[in-house]
Image (spheres, rainbow, N blue to C red):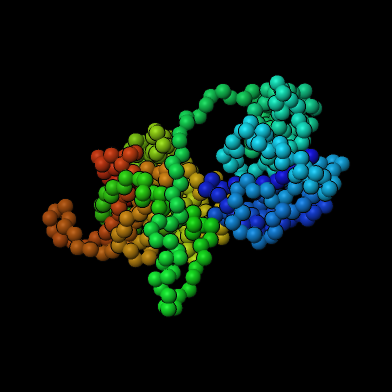
Length: 441
């Protein structure tokens, strides 16, 4: 029977998307791995691949359609020997079976890490499959063929596709190695907050009747940012730790390094040193290298540092530099430049902006002296970095002198990091910045 292709979840936060462009047309034959469409998620425009082979019978959603919910049917794939007439027949047959089939269906799993989503139909539109104890085993045609070729029993394979459907990856995993029985810690996801609180849009618009204004439509990214920041401020018990750091030693050391690295085309920024200082501080104070996981705390071993990147026209990404404690300053600089460039062009893959335990938000380059940053869940903390400025300070000998001073504020999730631990972590960051040569040891 015809198989429905569903709107995939191409990023961890995606709930709906825009079907930007179809790359196939009705009547085209496709194979697993072929690109079907370009889809705009809340973060980027990504390609959507087919995971089954067949003929495109019908495109259900037109190009340019916005707000298409995840798991909404967007096309129908016909198997060998089927025609467009079978689509209507399948729909009629599905109606009396819907209630019984849906009752036994498994819930759809989380989005796959690589952004691919199985092109499937709900149980009542699936191709007839083997049965056990009178219950159907739902599987894709490609999965059934591979299982038959390998001599595998589908009954013994657990499906990871929508509604528990067995897909190609499940069969290949069963062929390669036995499935792991170790279960991941169970955490109940927090309820997602509404996009807006307080007065409705209609009520606000009514307040400004007779006044001239422009209405700015929210794109997927801005909606996601609004929802996540609302969630963060409503559910995370923030507290703030403030310190100042003297940068004169770092500025002198940076100038020396840049002079030596000029021939290689490398120019280190102050932000590169801040990333390195924070990465090493997470290793020195490992209890601060942690995230909130619903009913438990996860303490990470590597220093995976996220850095906020503002986008033109609004919105932001927080690309993650993984294992940043192990990388040289020049490697950190090159990776950060690459991530920032691709972030501004919205070309990052989901795995490049998810994860990490800690983030840096630097507004010093815009002249902001100090500010408080909002924690990005599930991170345990975020460092807000202000601008460095010449200030009078009292030296160690008691004499008045002038130094370049930068203000920093550490926003901390009190569920993850207590006050004394947060103070220890911030002190370690400052020690690294004020003694930059030691970061190379």
